[in-house]
Length: 87
Image (cartoon, rainbow, N blue to C red; front, side):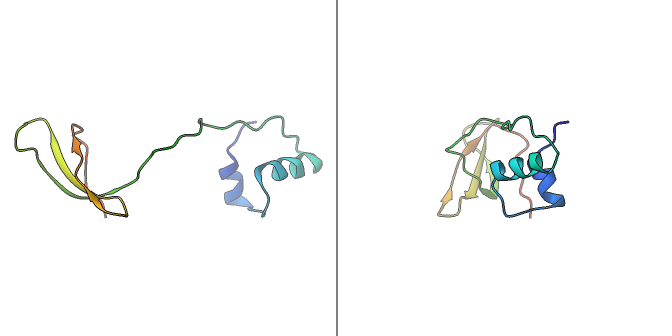
């Protein structure tokens, strides 16, 4: 049976690393066959809060946004129609 470690940790969250948790489960009789990542590692991802959404002055299909990335406000140009501000 496959299940995510995060699900298991919602039920019980011992102060063990992933490897230590797998070893402990195996020693308790619940065999852990493999540890598989769900996605490859990634970097250069920025999470931002959308502060303002407006029309691009020179293009009908583009949107200008003002976003807070924690350090400063940025102004990306978006083509996505589903950009929204949520509290």
